[in-house]
Length: 312
View 1 (cartoon, one colour):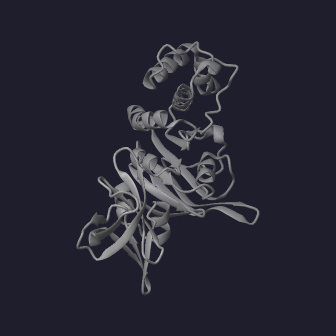
View 2: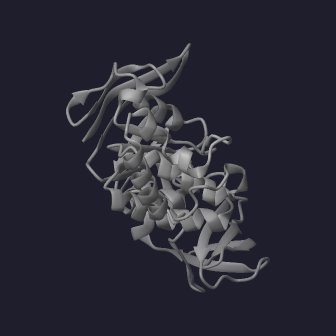
View 3: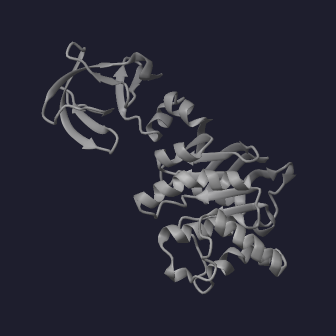
Protein backbone atom coordinates (compact mmCIF):
# COMPACT_ATOMS: atom_id res chain seq x y z
CA UNK A 1 0.00 0.00 0.00
CA UNK A 2 2.92 2.32 0.80
CA UNK A 3 5.97 1.88 -1.37
CA UNK A 4 9.31 3.67 -0.97
CA UNK A 5 11.81 3.12 -3.77
CA UNK A 6 15.51 4.10 -3.65
CA UNK A 7 14.86 7.08 -1.38
CA UNK A 8 17.98 9.18 -0.74
CA UNK A 9 18.20 12.42 1.25
CA UNK A 10 21.38 14.50 1.39
CA UNK A 11 22.31 17.54 3.44
CA UNK A 12 25.35 18.93 1.69
CA UNK A 13 28.02 16.25 1.81
CA UNK A 14 26.11 14.19 4.38
CA UNK A 15 23.83 11.38 3.16
CA UNK A 16 21.16 11.06 5.86
CA UNK A 17 19.02 8.47 4.03
CA UNK A 18 20.88 6.21 1.64
CA UNK A 19 18.97 4.36 -1.10
CA UNK A 20 16.17 3.09 1.18
CA UNK A 21 13.39 0.92 -0.25
CA UNK A 22 10.45 -0.23 1.90
CA UNK A 23 6.95 -1.61 1.48
CA UNK A 24 4.05 -1.40 3.92
CA UNK A 25 0.83 -3.37 3.63
CA UNK A 26 -2.58 -1.96 4.53
CA UNK A 27 -3.01 -2.02 8.31
CA UNK A 28 0.58 -3.18 8.90
CA UNK A 29 2.90 -1.74 11.55
CA UNK A 30 6.59 -1.42 10.67
CA UNK A 31 9.02 -0.52 13.45
CA UNK A 32 12.26 1.14 12.32
CA UNK A 33 14.98 0.58 14.92
CA UNK A 34 18.23 2.50 14.98
CA UNK A 35 20.47 4.65 17.15
CA UNK A 36 20.29 8.44 17.26
CA UNK A 37 21.58 10.01 14.06
CA UNK A 38 21.03 6.94 11.87
CA UNK A 39 18.56 8.80 9.63
CA UNK A 40 15.28 7.26 10.77
CA UNK A 41 13.54 10.59 11.53
CA UNK A 42 14.74 12.03 8.21
CA UNK A 43 13.30 8.96 6.49
CA UNK A 44 9.87 9.71 7.97
CA UNK A 45 10.06 13.37 7.06
CA UNK A 46 10.96 12.47 3.47
CA UNK A 47 8.03 10.05 3.23
CA UNK A 48 5.75 12.79 4.57
CA UNK A 49 7.13 15.27 2.02
CA UNK A 50 8.81 17.53 4.59
CA UNK A 51 12.31 16.78 3.25
CA UNK A 52 13.30 16.73 -0.41
CA UNK A 53 15.14 13.72 -1.75
CA UNK A 54 15.73 11.44 -4.69
CA UNK A 55 13.62 8.32 -5.22
CA UNK A 56 9.86 7.79 -5.14
CA UNK A 57 7.09 7.50 -2.55
CA UNK A 58 3.72 6.05 -3.59
CA UNK A 59 0.48 5.08 -1.83
CA UNK A 60 -1.95 2.68 -3.48
CA UNK A 61 0.04 3.00 -6.69
CA UNK A 62 -0.21 6.80 -6.83
CA UNK A 63 3.18 8.53 -7.05
CA UNK A 64 3.37 11.18 -4.29
CA UNK A 65 7.00 12.16 -4.80
CA UNK A 66 6.11 15.69 -5.95
CA UNK A 67 2.90 16.04 -3.93
CA UNK A 68 2.78 18.66 -1.17
CA UNK A 69 2.80 17.30 2.41
CA UNK A 70 -0.73 18.51 3.17
CA UNK A 71 -2.08 16.67 0.13
CA UNK A 72 -0.58 13.30 0.99
CA UNK A 73 -2.79 10.71 2.76
CA UNK A 74 -0.10 10.48 5.41
CA UNK A 75 -0.16 11.59 9.05
CA UNK A 76 2.86 12.42 11.18
CA UNK A 77 3.16 12.36 14.97
CA UNK A 78 6.22 13.76 16.74
CA UNK A 79 7.86 13.04 20.10
CA UNK A 80 7.00 16.52 21.45
CA UNK A 81 3.35 16.11 20.25
CA UNK A 82 3.33 19.74 18.90
CA UNK A 83 -0.18 20.58 20.13
CA UNK A 84 -1.58 24.10 19.82
CA UNK A 85 -1.45 25.46 23.40
CA UNK A 86 -4.09 28.16 22.77
CA UNK A 87 -6.67 25.63 21.52
CA UNK A 88 -8.76 23.15 23.50
CA UNK A 89 -8.37 19.40 23.14
CA UNK A 90 -11.37 19.28 20.80
CA UNK A 91 -9.99 22.11 18.65
CA UNK A 92 -6.63 20.38 18.41
CA UNK A 93 -8.12 17.06 17.33
CA UNK A 94 -10.42 18.79 14.84
CA UNK A 95 -7.64 20.84 13.23
CA UNK A 96 -6.93 18.51 10.30
CA UNK A 97 -10.64 17.97 9.70
CA UNK A 98 -11.26 21.71 9.59
CA UNK A 99 -8.38 22.20 7.16
CA UNK A 100 -9.92 19.49 4.96
CA UNK A 101 -13.21 21.42 4.88
CA UNK A 102 -15.29 18.95 6.89
CA UNK A 103 -18.62 20.25 8.19
CA UNK A 104 -18.90 21.10 11.87
CA UNK A 105 -21.28 18.25 12.64
CA UNK A 106 -18.92 15.74 11.00
CA UNK A 107 -15.95 17.24 12.83
CA UNK A 108 -17.68 17.01 16.20
CA UNK A 109 -18.70 13.40 15.63
CA UNK A 110 -15.21 12.36 14.49
CA UNK A 111 -13.49 14.15 17.38
CA UNK A 112 -15.67 12.35 19.90
CA UNK A 113 -14.93 9.01 18.23
CA UNK A 114 -11.18 9.63 18.33
CA UNK A 115 -11.12 10.83 21.94
CA UNK A 116 -13.08 7.77 23.02
CA UNK A 117 -10.70 5.56 21.05
CA UNK A 118 -7.63 6.91 22.89
CA UNK A 119 -9.32 6.83 26.30
CA UNK A 120 -10.00 10.57 26.63
CA UNK A 121 -13.78 10.64 26.37
CA UNK A 122 -15.10 13.90 27.86
CA UNK A 123 -11.77 15.75 27.51
CA UNK A 124 -12.90 17.94 24.60
CA UNK A 125 -13.13 21.21 26.53
CA UNK A 126 -9.88 20.74 28.46
CA UNK A 127 -7.04 23.20 27.94
CA UNK A 128 -3.76 21.72 26.70
CA UNK A 129 -1.84 23.14 29.67
CA UNK A 130 -3.91 21.03 32.07
CA UNK A 131 -2.95 17.69 30.47
CA UNK A 132 -0.35 15.25 31.69
CA UNK A 133 2.36 14.08 29.31
CA UNK A 134 0.53 10.85 28.57
CA UNK A 135 -2.77 12.67 27.99
CA UNK A 136 -1.07 15.12 25.62
CA UNK A 137 0.38 12.24 23.59
CA UNK A 138 -3.08 10.66 23.38
CA UNK A 139 -4.48 13.94 22.08
CA UNK A 140 -1.69 14.11 19.50
CA UNK A 141 -2.49 10.54 18.43
CA UNK A 142 -6.21 11.35 18.15
CA UNK A 143 -5.39 14.44 16.08
CA UNK A 144 -3.14 12.43 13.75
CA UNK A 145 -5.79 9.73 13.26
CA UNK A 146 -8.82 12.03 12.91
CA UNK A 147 -8.39 12.76 9.16
CA UNK A 148 -8.16 8.96 8.56
CA UNK A 149 -4.70 8.89 6.96
CA UNK A 150 -3.80 5.75 5.08
CA UNK A 151 -0.38 5.79 6.72
CA UNK A 152 0.64 7.20 10.10
CA UNK A 153 4.31 8.03 10.70
CA UNK A 154 5.34 8.05 14.37
CA UNK A 155 8.63 9.76 15.16
CA UNK A 156 9.68 8.38 18.59
CA UNK A 157 6.30 9.48 20.01
CA UNK A 158 6.85 7.88 23.42
CA UNK A 159 10.44 8.96 24.07
CA UNK A 160 9.58 11.85 26.41
CA UNK A 161 7.27 9.85 28.67
CA UNK A 162 8.15 8.19 31.96
CA UNK A 163 8.51 4.42 32.01
CA UNK A 164 5.00 3.67 33.29
CA UNK A 165 3.30 5.81 30.65
CA UNK A 166 5.58 4.51 27.91
CA UNK A 167 4.78 0.89 28.70
CA UNK A 168 1.07 1.65 28.95
CA UNK A 169 0.98 3.39 25.56
CA UNK A 170 3.21 0.72 23.98
CA UNK A 171 0.55 -1.78 25.04
CA UNK A 172 -2.36 0.36 23.78
CA UNK A 173 -0.96 1.76 20.53
CA UNK A 174 -1.30 -1.41 18.41
CA UNK A 175 -4.95 -1.75 19.49
CA UNK A 176 -5.71 1.87 18.58
CA UNK A 177 -4.08 1.52 15.17
CA UNK A 178 -5.84 -1.79 14.63
CA UNK A 179 -9.23 -0.28 15.50
CA UNK A 180 -8.80 2.35 12.78
CA UNK A 181 -7.09 0.02 10.29
CA UNK A 182 -4.24 2.51 9.95
CA UNK A 183 -0.88 1.37 8.61
CA UNK A 184 2.03 2.85 10.54
CA UNK A 185 5.78 3.30 10.52
CA UNK A 186 7.09 3.74 14.06
CA UNK A 187 10.71 4.81 14.53
CA UNK A 188 12.51 4.28 17.82
CA UNK A 189 15.90 3.54 19.35
CA UNK A 190 14.32 1.32 22.02
CA UNK A 191 14.40 -2.44 21.36
CA UNK A 192 11.45 -3.34 23.59
CA UNK A 193 9.28 -0.66 22.00
CA UNK A 194 10.17 -1.80 18.48
CA UNK A 195 9.52 -5.47 19.27
CA UNK A 196 6.17 -4.74 20.94
CA UNK A 197 4.75 -2.43 18.28
CA UNK A 198 6.07 -3.72 14.95
CA UNK A 199 4.54 -6.54 12.92
CA UNK A 200 7.85 -6.26 11.07
CA UNK A 201 11.15 -4.71 12.07
CA UNK A 202 13.56 -2.71 9.92
CA UNK A 203 17.06 -2.13 11.33
CA UNK A 204 18.63 1.14 10.20
CA UNK A 205 22.26 2.26 10.48
CA UNK A 206 24.17 5.12 8.86
CA UNK A 207 21.27 6.00 6.57
CA UNK A 208 20.71 2.46 5.28
CA UNK A 209 18.06 -0.14 6.07
CA UNK A 210 20.19 -3.22 6.66
CA UNK A 211 17.58 -5.90 7.43
CA UNK A 212 13.80 -6.28 7.46
CA UNK A 213 11.80 -9.15 8.94
CA UNK A 214 9.64 -10.16 11.87
CA UNK A 215 11.06 -8.95 15.21
CA UNK A 216 11.75 -12.51 16.33
CA UNK A 217 13.51 -13.47 13.10
CA UNK A 218 15.71 -10.38 13.01
CA UNK A 219 16.68 -10.64 16.68
CA UNK A 220 17.52 -14.32 16.48
CA UNK A 221 19.32 -14.19 13.12
CA UNK A 222 20.83 -10.79 12.30
CA UNK A 223 22.44 -10.82 8.87
CA UNK A 224 25.49 -8.75 9.82
CA UNK A 225 27.59 -7.82 12.82
CA UNK A 226 26.29 -4.24 12.48
CA UNK A 227 22.67 -5.40 12.79
CA UNK A 228 23.64 -7.54 15.77
CA UNK A 229 25.15 -4.50 17.50
CA UNK A 230 22.08 -2.34 16.84
CA UNK A 231 19.96 -5.10 18.38
CA UNK A 232 22.12 -5.08 21.50
CA UNK A 233 24.13 -8.28 20.92
CA UNK A 234 27.41 -7.23 22.54
CA UNK A 235 29.24 -10.49 23.32
CA UNK A 236 31.70 -10.52 20.40
CA UNK A 237 34.39 -13.20 20.21
CA UNK A 238 37.03 -13.42 17.49
CA UNK A 239 37.48 -17.00 16.19
CA UNK A 240 40.06 -16.95 13.41
CA UNK A 241 38.51 -15.08 10.46
CA UNK A 242 35.02 -15.39 11.97
CA UNK A 243 33.43 -13.05 14.49
CA UNK A 244 31.22 -14.97 16.90
CA UNK A 245 28.46 -13.33 18.95
CA UNK A 246 27.01 -15.05 22.00
CA UNK A 247 23.40 -13.95 22.41
CA UNK A 248 22.40 -12.63 25.82
CA UNK A 249 20.24 -15.72 26.37
CA UNK A 250 22.93 -18.24 25.36
CA UNK A 251 24.61 -18.75 28.76
CA UNK A 252 23.88 -21.37 31.42
CA UNK A 253 25.69 -21.64 34.75
CA UNK A 254 27.40 -25.05 34.60
CA UNK A 255 30.00 -26.26 37.15
CA UNK A 256 31.54 -28.50 34.48
CA UNK A 257 31.25 -25.91 31.68
CA UNK A 258 34.21 -25.06 29.44
CA UNK A 259 34.18 -21.30 30.16
CA UNK A 260 35.15 -19.44 33.31
CA UNK A 261 34.71 -15.81 34.41
CA UNK A 262 34.13 -13.61 37.44
CA UNK A 263 30.73 -12.02 38.05
CA UNK A 264 31.51 -8.32 37.80
CA UNK A 265 28.02 -6.87 38.28
CA UNK A 266 24.40 -8.01 38.63
CA UNK A 267 21.61 -5.62 37.66
CA UNK A 268 18.00 -6.56 38.45
CA UNK A 269 15.63 -5.72 35.55
CA UNK A 270 12.28 -6.66 37.07
CA UNK A 271 11.77 -10.07 35.47
CA UNK A 272 15.39 -11.17 35.12
CA UNK A 273 18.94 -9.99 35.79
CA UNK A 274 21.51 -8.35 33.54
CA UNK A 275 24.75 -10.11 34.51
CA UNK A 276 28.15 -8.74 33.52
CA UNK A 277 31.09 -11.16 33.53
CA UNK A 278 34.81 -10.46 33.32
CA UNK A 279 36.96 -13.16 31.71
CA UNK A 280 40.57 -13.92 32.71
CA UNK A 281 41.83 -11.86 29.76
CA UNK A 282 39.72 -8.82 30.68
CA UNK A 283 36.88 -9.28 28.18
CA UNK A 284 33.46 -8.11 29.39
CA UNK A 285 30.40 -10.27 28.62
CA UNK A 286 26.71 -9.65 29.37
CA UNK A 287 23.98 -12.24 29.79
CA UNK A 288 20.40 -12.40 31.05
CA UNK A 289 19.74 -14.85 33.88
CA UNK A 290 16.76 -15.58 36.10
CA UNK A 291 18.81 -16.74 39.09
CA UNK A 292 22.31 -15.23 38.90
CA UNK A 293 25.27 -15.78 41.20
CA UNK A 294 26.36 -12.87 43.37
CA UNK A 295 28.88 -10.30 42.17
CA UNK A 296 32.48 -11.29 42.96
CA UNK A 297 31.96 -15.02 42.44
CA UNK A 298 33.93 -17.07 39.94
CA UNK A 299 31.64 -19.18 37.78
CA UNK A 300 31.90 -21.78 35.06
CA UNK A 301 29.35 -21.73 32.29
CA UNK A 302 28.24 -23.28 29.00
CA UNK A 303 27.01 -21.63 25.80
CA UNK A 304 24.07 -23.00 23.81
CA UNK A 305 25.43 -23.40 20.25
CA UNK A 306 21.94 -22.76 18.83
CA UNK A 307 22.18 -19.24 20.25
CA UNK A 308 25.54 -18.37 18.76
CA UNK A 309 25.74 -15.99 15.80
CA UNK A 310 28.63 -16.27 13.31
CA UNK A 311 29.77 -13.62 10.85
CA UNK A 312 32.63 -13.70 8.35
